[in-house]
Image (cartoon, rainbow, N blue to C red; front, side, top):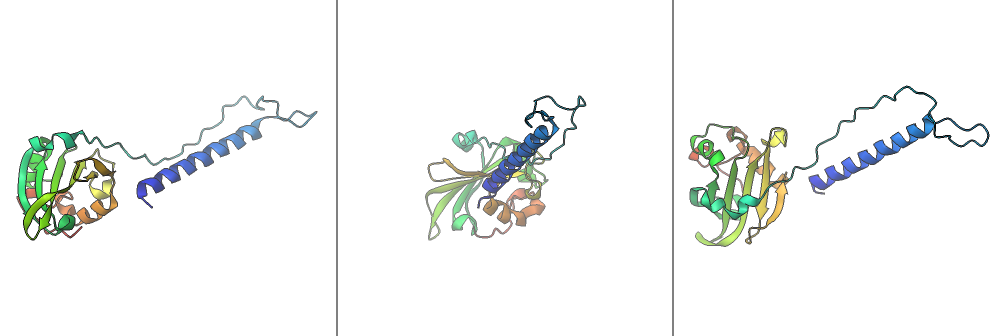
Length: 197
C-alpha cells in the first residue's frame, strides 16, 4: 500500500479514536438524573477539564507543479546524459536558479526551493528517442522528509502531467545512495554512478 495512503488511514483512525474517547469522557462527566438515569447535560464539576496533547503526524504537503510549464527556461546543465537510471533513458537535466550554484559547485546542501528536472528520452540503441517522462526533485522545507534530505519527487508521463508527487519511495530509496551529495547524483557536475530504476 502506498505510504501516503497508509499514513492518511492511520491519521483518520487516530482522529476517530480520539474523538470517540472524548465523547465517552464528556458523557461520563455528566451527572445522571436520579429519577430516570439519563444525563442532565450539566457537568458535575465547574473545573475546566484538562486537555490532552495529542501528537499528530503532519499530512502530505501539496507540491506545486507549476514549474512543469516553464522549466525549459532554466539552465540546461546536462544534455544527452546516458546512464542506467530511469530505465536506461537518455536524459537532459535542468536546474532552477535556486539550486544552480550548488549543482555546479557541489557545496551541499541545496537550499529550499531548488528544483531539478530530468527529461527522460527513450534510449533506442544509444540514439535519443521520444520523450518518455519527466523525473523531478523539489527541495522542501526542513522536516518534510528528513531521512531523505527533505526532497519531494514529481514524476510525469510524456504529456508532462504529474502522475506521482511527494514522498515517492522508489525515488527516495534510489537517491539514498547519493546522500553525501544531498541525494543528487550529479551534484558538483560529476556523475556519481546511478543505479537502474
